[in-house]
Length: 306
Image (cartoon, rainbow, N blue to C red; front, side, top):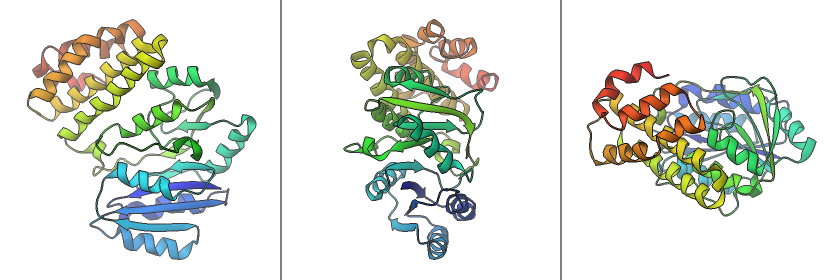
């Protein structure tokens, strides 16, 4: 069995598209668990309608707790050997589960990941050490939970940190990677992301995004201890992620407060590693140098950084 986990918050207009892509999978042994996280629209009513039409769907509701707590509760209800996360405003290809399971069975992979937007030219296998490096480079294998079929046993004893409002996926993926033996990365695009303006990633900048500091600070500190051969890459990734937070803040006209100053200090310390390790573009390296010293320039220059 594969358990598909769907956190729901104010997604009524998109739920039919999302769930139809799950119930019409070419692989049928599914548990589909949906939790409504205190929606203020008709999401719960739509969920009930969908559950009435397919016995594999289980629905629950709760007062608004946030996506991290909701995903933790979803994991608690999972019974499948594998789990797959799908956000309620997105959808997946109809052969996704069958394809992923067929790949997983080839060599008992702990994780089979796939692409969300841009395909890769080929599929590849990685052992744990290679997978850690790949994650830190953050290109073909990223921190999202929504592009991976993962053995459920790898989550045992782990919790997504509810205090992290931005980047909590990446911290959980990082923890799971400390338990894997081998993974497979497919070049195929199977997941379709809807540009929903209500999602946290599309909202105007607010202080919650500074919690990405916890995610990538923890990861870089862990790498210093457990993966010292990749310490420079981890700190370069930390600098890239903090540069992006500064970019978002500046683009929204966010004032230079203490949180901004802390991030600038961190980028000044580690920013040179972006160029040294080559994990991002020269443009990103230059932007990191500038924004860490002259925050006001970021408002002008952010439109030039892709």
